[in-house]
Length: 382
Ligand code: GLA
Image (cartoon, rainbow, N blue to C red; front, side, top):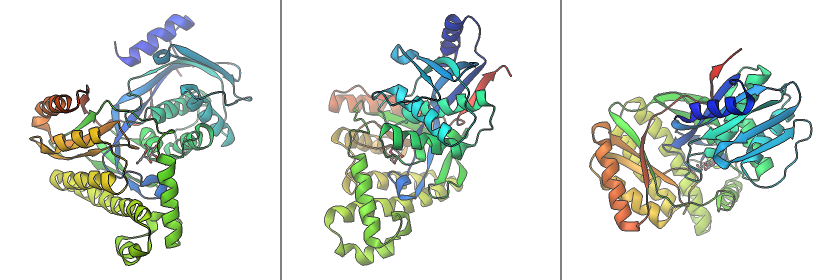
């Protein structure tokens, strides 16, 4: 049974009638542009065919009741008295409600069932999918139009101010605004977006290493602080404002660590713009080379890879049909992404998964994925 049908049938069992709405918001894979978003830079992700679904109906009061099938758990809260309780999936839901309240949207209560198939902790943004599905649910019952950038900002506020994760805007923005068969170039300063088509006859393959590291516990916030220190050194609001020539002119004045952190971000911004240009021309080979260079930069300069990830990426890069591969997401584990010739994608998946298992004894999940639309109402009785 699909996740969509399972939330509908569970809703119908629990509430005795079919849901008024079914909403969905996807996870994402980032093709290139890592740790550039909170430096006001550029990212190039796509929404994937893994998502979080909520089946729901409006309530006449200010109460939200949500059953989470994946966790065999449920939450209840009042929109006029939202309080942080303890770390868990429910705080992403409450954090979004709190941010939307603060932004002045008309909030109505609702009740429903949530489930998803975005792997947790794989760097594929399961939390942004929960946030954008929650926002989509509030927009549906409150009858407001979907404003992707505003909804993404509310999701980011939930992470930054409620959950305590100082993430950038990429994950929420792509989950809110993705488009089928396309990647999305996002300018994380202006939030301007441009859809770029995926190269013809290619497949995007996600290679989950089966290694995990929670973002909040990770060195993510530390990397962000190092980037801010580098921007302060150059006297600019964000590393987005430093180009390679300026960086090289003063690199010797920086300590080794700050120099390498800044070099990653500045070179990654340039690679991301070059990658968008490659995609506009359908140039998979150029895109692949940029992905490989991005991985080396994350591994050596930003130091957010790990040995198993480097094994996975090296195996992918060496496999027949592969244009390029790199780690994707926040880092320290999770998934890699590869751009592969479509005709060879099935064999690529088996070859790399087998070799990775032989080398590491871990059980990877390798999937060929499709670029999908961002958050949407997939069924509704208006
Ligand atoms: C996580 C964050 C994003 C982004 C990436 C790294 O996914 O949520 O905002 O910073 O890491 O590119």
